[in-house]
Length: 344
Figure 1 (cartoon, rainbow, N blue to C red):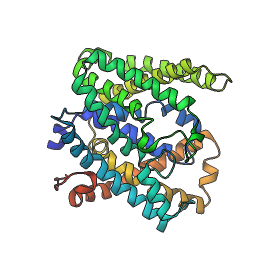
Figure 2: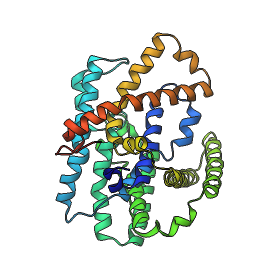
Figure 3: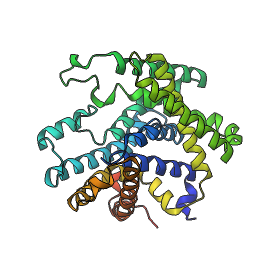
Figure 4: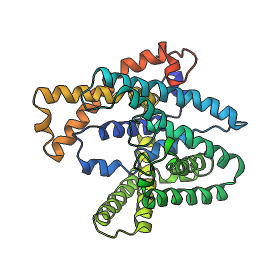
């Protein structure tokens, strides 16, 4: 194991690898909806959880914003501009004009040319999180986080988007979502400081299997309820949150049980680059497969779609190893590092 791996928390990089894998496969057109429904509750919330877990308290908000601007806003800007410009030059799908896409990117309204929304939303969520950690004790922090989470869900479910000129109740810079992020960041922070040592007894293969079965059963129940008319908001919200929590717990189980693997850890510690670059590479591969006539046929059924999706993601993971190494070694500022870090 190299020195860089020793300075990092291995299971965190394992978890980030699992989540970026699901992020990448979720963006493929061949991925069947049943697979997306399986990992949708946790593949982003686990990222938020880890952000809270690794959070280091800062002496004031200005210092925090400066650090997060370099670590998140700079990569958000660099990768979003890269994706917008390359889409104008090499495009496999319909897109808006360069001017409109640049404006929408700055507005950051969910669903409107915001391919790097996750990074922007995470930056904004650090602002309330700073105050939660600095001024509230654990019990109060958790209660307020839960209340704000519910308010976010109520807003998203009941506020009519037609009152806004952009036709959706999504707000600029993802303000309607940041307290959802904040809730899971708080849980990650409390997990590291209060709960991790006490929960060690849970981490076994048997418990992992039991929680896995419980997760699948709850997921089936939620899917069945969602298909019914007049679905009760409270029940749906409770099941969604419970699935998210169990899903994160399962990710931790798997991440802590995985043996050290330098490639998994390397990708896990560079998920920001993979998040920023995978979309265009996936589009190229999908287009090539479509041109040679094997893509549509392979994706006509659930099993075929899953196999093709996994194969494409593995190929993209391998292809992006070189760009990731180059960025880390020669252009570290792209990912908010203002020095050249040695990469083995």
